[in-house]
Image (cartoon, rainbow, N blue to C red; front, side, top):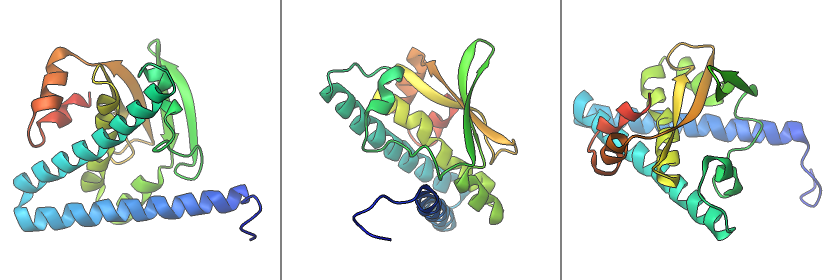
Length: 187
């Protein structure tokens, strides 16, 4: 491949899938080490805290980029932020938008991260990574959350996400909650 030419789509998909597998393993390795060192309860609190920080940093950076374009940080403008936008290919086998109960939802089939966690029989620890979706949206605009209706690590055939307004209580928990309390917002 020439560094001056365009990268073929199949090659780009393979590269993104490779990076996704590595991220899945990195998360799993850190999560396992934390729980082994601190025990189940304290370990889960520390992992939840780290995932919250990780997602919030993505959301804050996205908000700054969106606002620098003169746009409001609304759900419709979230993808205008470029630094941490997910690629449209390579991380999943297929993504579709559907309407369920008059609500727009995104379904992601064949999540590469979930496949790795399944290979290792570590869906429960892997699933903790998915909470970053809630955190990134609340870091972007605390009035909204992106939640999981279904996830592959929880045994569903696809991940299904939607964006909903947050409650005052959810915003309080997110901003002040310690440990894993904020995970309850993903509903």
